[in-house]
Amino acid sequence: MNQDLLGRVALITGAGAGIGRETALQMGARGAIVCVNDIKEELVIPVVDTIKDRGGKAFAVPMNIASREGIRDAIRSAFEQGGGRFDILVNNAAWVRYQAIPEIMPETMDRMLDVGFKSVVWSLQEAVAVMDPQRGGSIVNVASVAALRSAANSVVYSGIKSGIMGITRAAAAELGARNIRVNAVCPSAVPTEGTQRNRDAARDANRIARTPLGRLGTVEDIARAICFLSSDDAGFITAQGLTVDGGITLTNI
Ligand SMILES: NC(=O)c1ccc[n+]([C@@H]2O[C@H](COP(=O)([O-])OP(=O)(O)OC[C@H]3O[C@@H](n4cnc5c(N)ncnc54)[C@H](O)[C@@H]3O)[C@@H](O)[C@H]2O)c1
Image 1: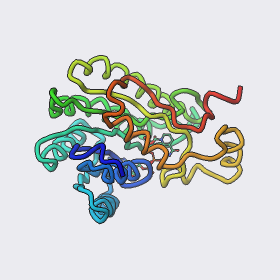
Image 2: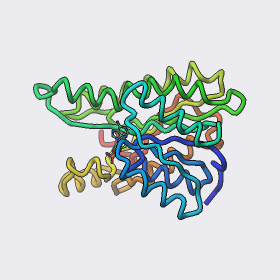
Image 3: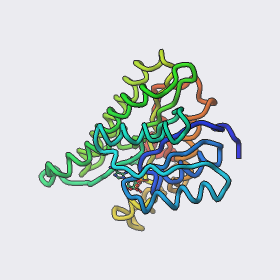
C-alpha cells in the first residue's frame, strides 16, 4: 500500500471496533505509527497485534476519552509512545442512543455529549499543544449524514453531529495559522458493531434502493476517506465535511 503516512504519529479514538478499527488498520498499512484508543482494552490489543503482524507500528492507548483529562492523557500517551511527535488525530469515538423526545434522559444525553462532543473540543487544546507548528497536523472528526439531514428519534445525535461540523469549521479557522487542518467525514449508515442493534434487512434494502451507487457503505469506504483527509494529498483542504454516502443524502428529492 502507498506509504503516504510514513512515520506520522496518529491517534484514533474508539478504534477497537467499526470505522475506527478499520482506520487504524489502513493507517498502519500506510506507514503511520498508530496509537489505538478504545475504552475497552480487550478490543485495543487485537487491533495493535494485527497492525504489527502486517508489518506496521502500533501502540495501545486503552482509555476513556470522555473527559478533558481522558482525551488529554490519550493524546499525551500517543505523543510519548510515538517518540515525541504527534501528527494525526481522528475523533471517532461515540456512544449513541436513538430516543424519541419524551424518552431522552439526562444520563444518556450527558454520556453522548461527553464522548461525542465535549471530548472533541477538549482534544483540540491538547492536540494544539503537541503538534509541531513547522510540520503541522491533521484532525479528522467523524460526523455523520445526520449533520445534514435528520430523522425521528435523533434529536441528540443529529444535534451533536451538526455541532461537530461547527467545531470543525471554527477550529479550522483558528488553527490554520499553525498549519493544522481540521476536517470531518459524514458517513451514511455503515454496518458496524455499533449499528448492529438498529439495523434490519428491510431497512437496509430500502436504503440500498435509494442510494445511487446501489449498496451500503463499508468501514473500508469511510476509513479511506479519513486517510485521504489525513494525508498530504489533502494538504490544501480544511474546514470541510466530506460526505461518504454513495450519493443518498443529496438525491431522492
Ligand atoms: N456506523 C455508521 O453507520 C455510522 C454512520 C455515521 C457516523 N458514524 C460515526 O462513526 C463513528 C464510529 O461509529 P461505529 O459505528 O464504527 O461505532 P462502534 O460503536 O462500532 O465503535 C465505536 C467504538 O468507540 C468506543 N468508545 C465508546 N466510548 C468510548 C470512550 N468513552 N472512550 C474510548 N472509546 C470509546 C467503543 O468501545 C467502540 O469500540 C461514530 O462517531 C459514529 O457516530 C457511524
